[in-house]
Image (cartoon, rainbow, N blue to C red; front, side):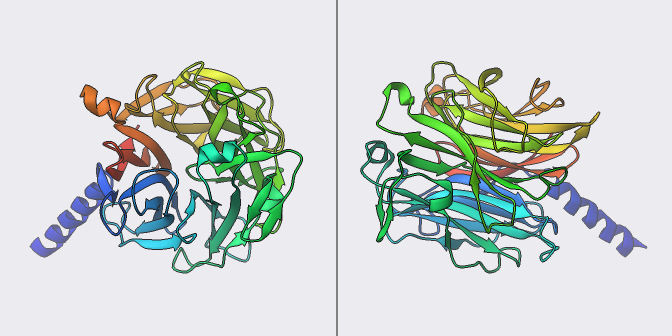
Length: 389
C-alpha cells in the first residue's frame, strides 16, 4: 500500500513539475560552441514532443556573420532538453530566421511532417538595403519528429523578387526586393474550411532604395496549398515600415497578420486581416492595444469561444525598452485584447537599457497554459516557461 501511495505521489510531483516550470534555460550564450543564441522559434508535435530552434551565432551576437540554425528537443513538456543539434549551416555566412510548422493535413504523414523555412545571406542588412547582396529562401523537412531532415530545397524564385547572385544562381526581378526575412517564430497552417491544409509563412522585405525611417520595409507572406511543392506570394501590407510579422488563421477562412512597426512613428503593433486565407490583405492599421518597443512578437490560435478563434499574443509589451514580456489574449480574433499576463520583467534601469526580454515564440500546452520560449537578460539566455492564463 505504501509503495503504491509513494509511486502515486511521485507521479503527482512529476505532473506538477511539468506544468509549473519557469525560466528553464534552453540555449545559453557562450556554451555549446556558440558565442550567442538568438531568434527563438518553437513547435509541438502531435506526440507532445517539443522542438526549440534558434540561431547559433558562432563569433558574437551580431545579426550577420557565421550563423547556424540549431535545435533542441523535450519530451517532458520543457522540463528537460536534449543536447544541441546543428541543423543548417551556410559555410561561414548566415543561415537564420527559422520558421517551423507541423503539416498535419498530409495523409502520407498522419503523425505530421515538419517544415523548417529559413533564409541565407551573404551581406548584412544595411548592405542588403543598398542592393549589395542577396537573401535566399529555403526549407528542410522531417517526417520522423526531427530525428532526420531532408536536403535543403531552394524556393527563392517562388517567394522572393531579388536582384543579385548567390553561388552562381542569378536573380533578376523588376520588383527589386532587397532585404528579406521569414517571420522570426513559427509558421501556421489552416486546419479547416476552404483553405484547409494551407501553410502560411509570414515574411518581410525592403523594396528599392533605402528610405528614411525604414519606409522601404513591408510585410508580406507566402503560402503553399500542396505540402511544399509550389508556393504563392501574398500582396504586401501597404502601411510603410511594417517589418517582422506573425500570422494566424481565424474563422471564416480568414487570416490575421501582426507585424512590427519599424518606422517607429507609433510604438505599437500593426494588424491586418485577409479574407482569403492570406492571399490578399485588407488595409493595415496601428493597434494601440498592443504596445511594442520595435521588436518581434508571436501570435497563436489556442481555441474557440462563441464561434470565434481565441488568440494568444506575446511580445515585449513596452513602448521604450525591450522589457515587460507579456501574454495577451483576444476572444474576438484580435479586435480586443481583454486579458494580459506579465511573463517576465526587470525594474533595473540598466538592464532595461540592455534589453531584458526580447524575441519570443509560443505553443499551446493545455486549455489554460501557454509555453513561451524567449530571449532574456540581454540575450544571455533563451529560456522556456509555462504560463497559466
